[in-house]
Image (cartoon, rainbow, N blue to C red):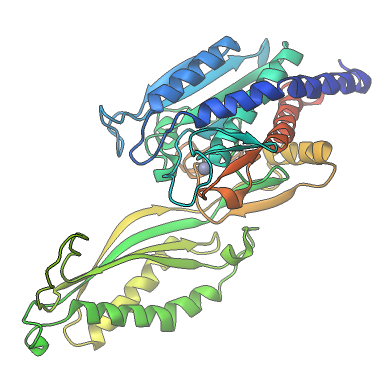
Length: 437
Ligand SMILES: [Zn+2]
């Protein structure tokens, strides 16, 4: 089969094929940004899937558009559409799957650029979703197209998917596809998710998450005679004090061997997302005064992120124990705890084939060793791991992590080119290199 000289020549032409597509890469990224697939509510999924469908069929892919009927948020107004495109080689072999989410988060304040303009300035393309993760999607498409032009005869298959709802849990996207068997290890062997983890880093997985609502109860009474009622907000104050005194120090003391970035996320963390107690807030144009009532209910939503070394039962248990302690010792204290969602941590083995392949290509393209990281927040790897049972999965993409969800989000064109080289090189390594046959 190919000797190293021939292989070297092909790699040169592969890189040339990527560089030749620079304008195409820019235009593709801009086109994707200009379809405002905001989630919530989950807008224009069908439009972006139709766009990708046309593009990938032109490149010889067979495509399927799949609506995740009945998943959270799916409706006739906002249907949860996904696309899975596949191109088979000329011989049997492994399948490499690039999975990108097509949704973007709300715009928010503080922009100086048009969030859906796809403006190109100084080698950066601006827009909501540029970095997270339409730039990564575009880079993976260009990588696959350049690979197909350079190596028309390859073994195995390439798949590219565009999936809904990652920003809201992925239940109408990757979770649904995994349930339908699209990430069955018999069908797909390697998954690369081009999330914005920076072009020189391989992301092995993510921490777990546990979301719950806690409600404390009281008894309504006239505000001038609070002793005739029972204040649910004061009970919640006792909960928060117990968190400060016991839970936060305990969590801060726990650290992980997971290479989570940024480093602050190498301990357990908990955010208190919201607090509501007493009367509902009135609209801004309400000019009246509040009524005088003792609140009979107070609710908080907690967002607890946990480490691979922690057990979900312990995570739930320590909060419950704290609440039970208050119930035993605090007069009239009563509570309800409702779990909202739970995601277990996911970590791909550092020696897994896709990890080693992409890391070697990073070193080849960028001239320095790859960094191995894990993500503080979860992403669609959780579904590929837990539902699909596919362990050979990483996140690798061109965007700069810290720009995700920020105003004036952008993706660098050179970063997309470099990461496309890495992705295309990984395709060569898995689908062409004779030693793997
Ligand atoms: Zn993302």
